[in-house]
Image (tube, rainbow, N blue to C red):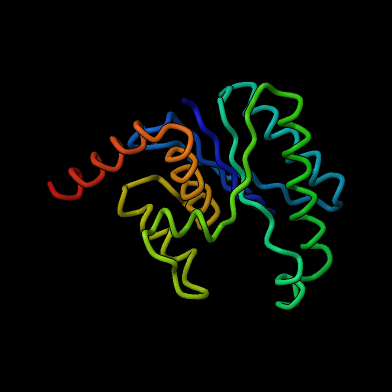
Length: 175
């Protein structure tokens, strides 16, 4: 089963590969542009091109954080609109393709990937370090978060292949 995972943001992290693969592919999409409409169009175009070339069976995306928590942390309106808007763009593009779309809370994916709930403010660093331990070719936190979501998606979409991958990772670290 082919799975793509996204960590949405101005730099969108992308991770994709067959469930159970030892080394998924990762990429970053820079969707910075002067206007929200231009950023939306860039995300739409990157995602459509990816879906056309890779044809995943499932697309998993990090859900936008709860609005109340973002407002308490002082997140500005542009960021709020972007994150919720990016999520909607992915939904619209996925609707036009024969791809299953799932959304996952970042904290749930991190807890599954790391085996523990990271301390506040330490999640991104812990995920990046775990990806490096797996020798995955992540270049930044966005790609690492996408890889974390991909790992979670593999466990839910193809549990047998995922379990074999877990065993392969353990064997690789032991040797």
